[in-house]
Length: 188
Image (cartoon, rainbow, N blue to C red; front, side, top):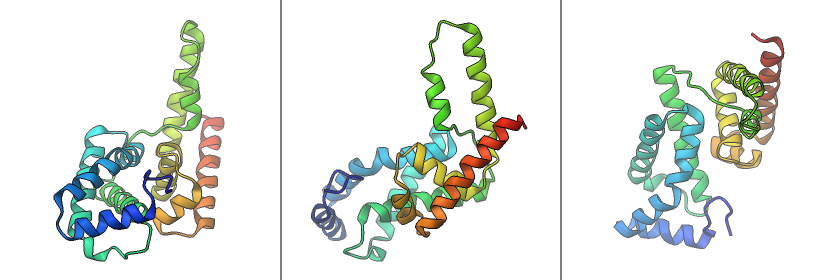
């Protein structure tokens, strides 16, 4: 069973074949299967609901238009995630936006006891430092970071999605975390 989609490879192949034959129910099933997952990838990258929804819609449109380019036997979910990731990168390049992102540390700080105003002020200050640091990441570091911490993908899955070597993904992940730590430590 494929952990990414909840479907196994035979089901994905059958779904793909049905979509290729023009079965609208198959396409609707695929949308239901991947809509939230693609939204998490895009939202993690842009931190903007409208941007994320546009990426979701663009992804499904591109999947529909490019059904012939999918190679039967390859991982269907990786193909869809790669399309979504590329659309995020393209949109980022086109608009040159630097939207806010957060780090896993920020998620932990949100769980802090809400009753202490001094502690809450410290948490808010840390959150802002982390967000500024994440905004300074390169496009590729930001994409790896987003897939890792917002879509909860393993580094090997990110490698497949982005179509880059696993070692490159590990390096991008490591450098992103180091850059964030350095930025937060120096308070830049």
